[in-house]
Image (cartoon, rainbow, N blue to C red; front, side, top):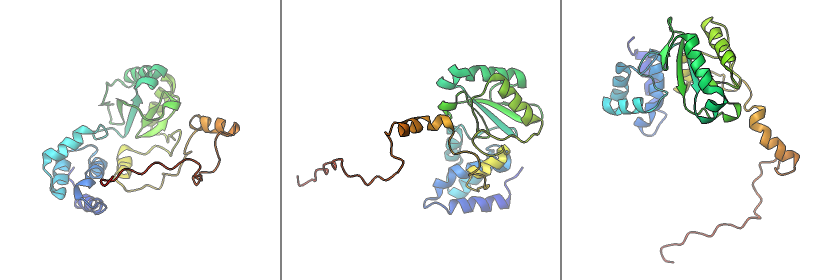
Length: 231
């Protein structure tokens, strides 16, 4: 699939958001994935052309960040956190179970192109370990069986709602959001779950934390000013 004129116009719109054109490269690469399903050679060349960069410079960025894929991704990218806490809480077992269940290895896609499975690093959701993400939406407190049921529902085309967010959309649709084109779903689902708020609630019960965010209390001494050259 070729990069269309419409996609080029959207890339120019992204560039216009930034004071320096090259700052637009990351969202432009997400837009390439939204249109092509992965970062293609043509997508790299188009980004380089519009930004006045070499293809080597664009490729260096595209291969540095793991969210950019150099081969086609399925409709649903399923990422299993296998970093330390998730791993010991069951993430390794979940990943192994999904490999057997789907018949694919790491960073491989099922026949028919529905699910790509990958083990990924920390999702910053340790209080809900082990965590699985589908197109970067959280599925908390997973088990081997719940993860298998999750991917089966995705393959069957069912609507699947994430634990702390909206119904899961396709990889390409989510990539458009990451490129800076909102889908209007950012406010869906709870902003934080009970596990994330447990410490705050306990502090409030003990009277150790104000309910207000007012930071006008000046009881603490002001820091000493930095010495000047004359000093």
